Length: 193
Image 1 (cartoon, rainbow, N blue to C red):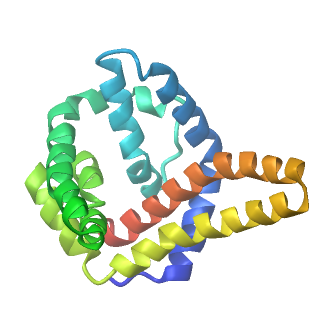
Image 2 (image 1 turned 45 degrees about the horizontal axis):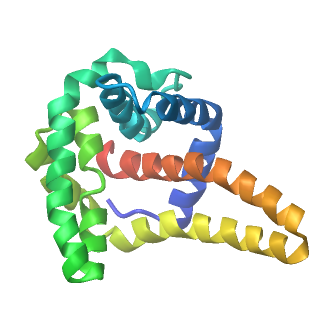
């Protein structure tokens, strides 16, 4: 399936803002529990699965990351992340651009493991297949909203430091739901259709 850039951005922003309260609360809870062994593994897996939940149009719970089912996928999650890192990191060190392309190619792997119960290698392969022909659209769908938000923040700082600081705070709060919403929209279009 071929993604449409503007549709992906628009639907992703809407999806992210619709779920913003739950995403922000889950993010805060994740940060508060990051130091608790074993629990932090489950909450990290829960955070990684938020785009898949959003792609299914499910209402997110304010405590979604504490779902005990996430700890069942501990091994598969960390094997997938390890394989992803072992492939992407050398590519970044050797030549930056291929590392970035590979990270986009494999960007759906964790969601495929958690949501569709694929094995780690199968998920990396499937992610590469799903993103084929869409890498530029995925790149711009994730980059353009961030660039636009920071341009507005920059204009705010040019007008007044207080306004710029206020806009920076709003941008910091809004960017996570927007980026997760765009990830959910990409996942929905490519993996759920």
